[in-house]
Length: 82
Length: 156
Image (tube, rainbow over all chains, first blue to last red; front, side, top):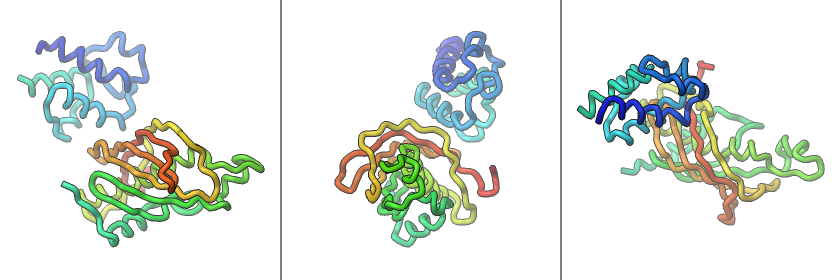
């Protein structure tokens, strides 16, 4: 799977949880999930679980803690699916 | 693997539910495991909210039904899951995170309701559950998905 495909899937997963929908238009790797997209922090668990399902991977809690930006999520997933 | 709680544990969980009268909507925890909870509440005719909802025509407010579903389905189940994970040392309080509930029947004063909660996931102190409320007859009152996040008692 290409990085672009992973990125697009991550954006799709984030979509329903984003309060700042305008932020989705110019979403990029450095976009912060909580501060830029205004995703409620209690939804981060749902997002991590959705990523596990979508990419068939396991994400440890310590790894999830480091996922603050869209790029961090993409890199984490990329590293796991090889 | 189903970790069912004994009567003693169920009573202990009941005693740890922080909500109290007049905002306590759990009388009994009937079943409890690491994957589900069943509880019961009797809406007595003198509940404080019937006076205003509605004058002369009392009916249990939908938000109170959701609160009842949350106290049994999230708070009680969450306390038990937290106990399994961390032992009894830390008491947590569950903050409501989200809900999507549909209602099928009104609940009149004097009714007894049964709430059944099935865990969808519990991770990083977040519990999400499929929760149903029925009358004693088995008729469905409300169903939906609720979630809550456990935090330490002193955190607001």
